[in-house]
Image (cartoon, rainbow, N blue to C red; front, side, top):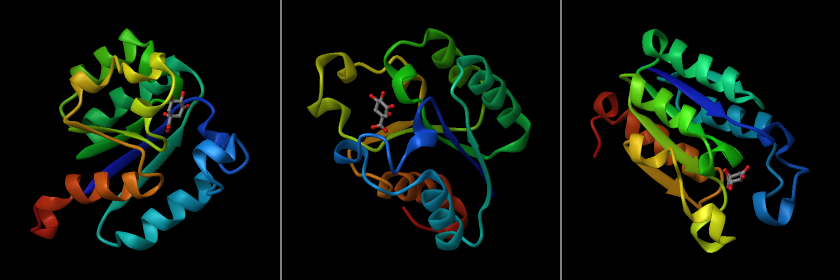
Amino acid sequence: MNILILNGPNLNLLGTREPDTYGTTTLADLERDLESSFSDVTFTFAQHNGEGALIDQLHAARKQADGVVFNPGGYTHTSVALRDAVAAIDPPVVEVHLSNVHAREAFRRTSRIAPACIGQISGLGPTGYHLAVRYLARGEEGGD
Ligand code: DQA
């Protein structure tokens, strides 16, 4: 089972970026925790600040991943192109947000990308990534 963990703009600054909203866990911590929690999963970790690089990474996942956990960051609320990229690929994509986007500014309540995803997890911090991986890997783990 190959899973792509794809993070969008500004998520490279996790740990120091608005810690009251996003916590103090760094992206490297989050990735290390996933790797140690799911020994049966082969992870690809990627983070890009640009929309084009995120689209290229999603296209590459067509052949390389059985599932994708995607935090599109601020592009969540704006990007038709990312939504189309998610719709264009076969592996299921779970949209994840560290913060509860529905409890913040009104513009964060709309995701252009979620309708093309299999589901969305929002507001559970790094645990959201773990739950998304657990869902995507359920066939192999025999759960859910
Ligand atoms: C975020 C929520 C987005 O609204 C914001 O632009 C981010 C992070 C989250 O993980 O909570 O960059 O995706």
